[in-house]
Length: 569
Image (cartoon, rainbow, N blue to C red):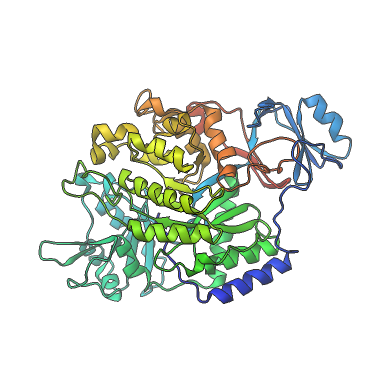
């Protein structure tokens, strides 16, 4: 998903507001552990669960049947009898009747604010042709203000007959009275009508920006589709929402996340205006899940990251910055070492060239930021590793640099990731969404090292799982299902797609819990269910199994810092 680099209105203004918010919530310290992990947590038990399948992710005690909480900490994980004895008469005790409890699931790569946008904008998912997509757009437009920008998302030409790119003409035929911008499902391309092209000043004489492409017809006229950095040409003229609008989107997205069992997210690529809204909500105690955010980095403007990230504000912190090295596989923007199998001569795009990326990574790490780099193609991944190596040779320390997606690997890149101490932040549902066409893109040899979770784990590469929502569905159970089966919802292909890369159920859960915690420097306080750890729990309506039953499983309760923030009705 493309996250637009945002230039702060004023770095000093942003810093001032954040500092005021920090002061408002008692110095900005997050609600992290108050007692050493593994020691006895004193106080009366406030909430307990018994009679369940507790998957702790703690090697010292992998499973249990009950768990007791004291405030925002886990007090005891053990048998029903042990927890009942510890709970006493005042605690609220909930009978699980065999339901599964895991540490709170954390989506390690998503766009929470983007989900809020998506909930408001026109959804164009699941349409099997350009004509069907246009028909859905017409229906949705009836409820929109005439003349105002119409923004949508979700089309995917890979689902359509012939897999051809759409054109402005098809939108113009039904909606020519207003500018229309429809983002591809992965956010790496946009489909515009002529009114939007004109508003952005895009004509036949407009040059392709670095790292982007304006699709054109035989005469050189723009067809209406912009890829990767070319999307910025229209993004800069779409009206910006105010703070109240941003807050409304965030609040709506949070409720969806909690209902899907998420106790935290890694918010990948936001601007300072959105961060200010998050911080305000957190300072007021109105952010009921943990948001670990990454600034949308601009490699051409590094002054922002030469300044240390601010302190956490309640449940919100932004200590990371995200860069893009390439585009996406679905729009053929992922940078490959060799040409696309289905598009000879095309090797993808450099959204950021190596020299610029290297300078940006160095500047951010020097400023105390964690760096995440979107890299999908093998050439893009190698370039990200090159930048990591160069920076770590100059700056010592535990930086936990992350490669986001890491989809099309080459055999030598696994060892290079190990040596770079890089984290693989991956999204299992991308594999099952992409499998109908991914091999056509890269061919039979390269696909063997694509979406390679098992190979990552076997090499000892830290693995953190997410979904990239709203590119994919929010529901982490779909990610667990994809990870353990490598099949679609209908059970295809039989045995799984390149099944040697499957994970066990516990390995998949670990990537959403322990892995996500490690990827945000929180492994000493989150990701496991053990005494002293944060009381973040995801509880399902049945015992989990590594099969299609995951698709029917629902969330029963979501617990954040010991409080029930979602309960199924």
